Amino acid sequence: MVDLLDRILDKGIVIDVWARVVLAGLDLGIRVEARIVVASIETYLKYAGPNRLLGR
Image (cartoon, helix red, strand yellow):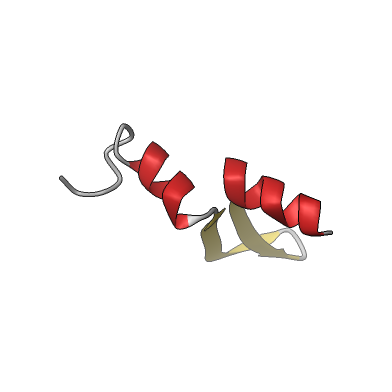
């Protein structure tokens, strides 16, 4: 378990979810969007800069 956590923090993981709510074939117009990023601060800063995620 420690090795798995270490690998995830070293490499990082992104979970991107998009869903809509449909009831009995009727789209209720409710959408759920989520983006979850799990990484160490060092890994985030390493990849966020080139991807312009730091706002600089």
